[in-house]
Structure formats: C-alpha cells, structure tokens
Image 1: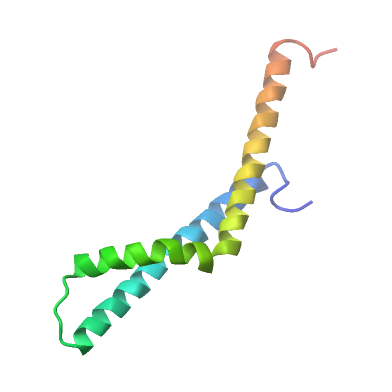
Image 2: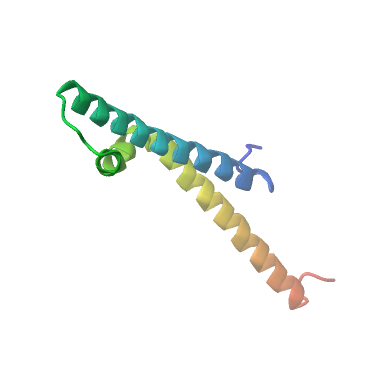
Amino acid sequence: MSEATRPDGAGRSLARNLALYTVARLGLVVIITAVIMGVAALVKVSIPLIVALLFGLLIAMPLSLVLFKKLRTRVNKDIAAVDAKRRADRDQLRSRLQGKGEQ
C-alpha cells in the first residue's frame, strides 16, 4: 500500500509535497530576483529591491508551471486522494448516523 493510499498517509504526503512545491516556487522567485539585481549591478543601474522582487514574481509564476510540473502533478494527486478519503469518511458517517451500518 503506497503512502498516499494509507488512511493517514494521504494528508502527510500532501503536506510534504505542497511544502516542497511552495519552497521551490519561492526559491525560483529569489533566484530570479537575484539575477535581476546582479544584472542591474553589472550595467550600473539602480533598481529598487521591491521592483526586482515584483518582476521576479511575475517571471517565476509561469516559469514554475513548466519547471515544477511533476511536483505540481503530485500535489494535485494528493489533493484528490485526501478529497476522496474525506468524501468516503463523510459518507460512512452519514450511513452510521442513519443506522444503516449497524446490524
């Protein structure tokens, strides 16, 4: 049984993969911002950090969709697994509350 299909593993897998995806995207923003600031320093142009950060964010958003596709796909699968587990638990609770599960 894989970690995503175990009752407690789906949430843990989602949390881990979501954290990795978030850190990867933030790291990409930092790297792009550093490149922008570095290039600006090489050509002796003063760019405020907030402007470089905003450009880094705008560039990183679509770029992360391409660069981190596998990680994003894993997060989506984990979300689907957690949602399916939650739905099954809700249906089981409803049937128990209606007395259908008891003999």
